[in-house]
Length: 537
Length: 85
Image (cartoon, rainbow over the protein chains, first blue to last red):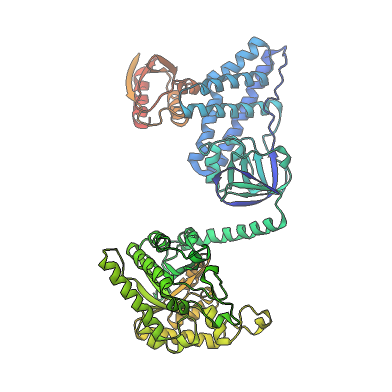
């Protein structure tokens, strides 16, 4: 397995066997002809059939890529009929008593040279058109058919370069991708590849030895992977499938509202683990960020991240989302997600241990740094602050007090600071039971179904022996969610789900019926969920 | 002989496609049609000839029409180029 780099003309993934298109450009033999009149007649017939071929190509291109793409073949026909061009060929046949193929090749070189010498990039590129029609004419003279490849299965077509006529002439149902050594992204071929939506790479320095081997064209990263191993192949097969489904969904769902048929709007947000996830969030048209796990800022460092470092990351996300809500969860680490510099003791039962808000409230210097960064960043967008692992009203009040104090400090020193929405994670059975009291304290709830399930069912998620009884749709969980929604709504607190259950298509209808206001899921679940919600009553 | 001048409006000049259209139109004329760009001149019925003029957007071209039907030919050709080129 090895990888060759190229420049993407059209993105997409193709997997298949490589077919290297070999050209026999210089393979024109010169020989003497006794009867020039006969040779001129042979040329005339060849010109006529070449013209017919070009006419057919024009028709084919017209159907496949439309008029603007097909126009080039009309121009090719005119070039072929051009009197200067035909005169030159005829003169060479007559004057030098040589065969037509040779006369065409010489004429082609002369005309191409004339264009290459012109003081205009566009005209210089027309040299390729002259070579293209001349080669076609030569193969007609030789009695060769123009068809390029002869394999039955679809292939990745690799060539030095492809002329427009070669590109259009190829049977598209048998081409998975184009890979060329030369050519520019503005060449006709590149334009045609884009119009035909076939993954294409240019500027790939391949050797002819790749003929017949399996390869993957990754038009997203601009590379071709030669003889991929089974693992890579499997990975790309999945990607290819997802790509196809995603494309379809994107077309259908991007820019649409997430609303049921009866007009109930659901906020469809995305979960992210860092700023690197932002492109996927935007591409999948998330309406906001429902859970930004701030742990990554701590996990990737050797020491506590500074206020400035955190501020920069939060600000980036807030600004990228351009006014859409970004819910940032404060630090959620514990004995199961160890960070060396925190110096946490090893615990026998980390899930029930010293973690999340418990650490933050115990170590105000850590908490205050993060809250200051969050409050400052909230001046640059629409930020929500969310506290994890809440079991009591007191924890919420103490956390809110920090926010009030820090806001006042910032304002006093003239530092910009927003007024973020405040929310809590509902992930302990305790928080569910006191959700009515909690609702009076906060703007929103976000139900973390992973932990809530583990704590409610008393099943360790990591314990495989318990898999068979780990019922994620357990009625206890569903009733708890319903209860949280009802209690939240009593006090104008909106309620969302940010756990894995939120993306479970079997429960979407149930959640909507319960009155859930928001679902926050991985970026790739956004559009499938939007589709599902739009089909609900 | 009838002659007239026109300015090339297409910012790309006389590229393959507009040149192709121009040739097609010139072919309709019975008269001989010559296009001049500065000191270079070309037979308007020959594509490579016209392309070799290296016409750029904004260039002022002189067209000369010569033949029995030169008046009508010049008129229709002029109408075409002012509209399309």
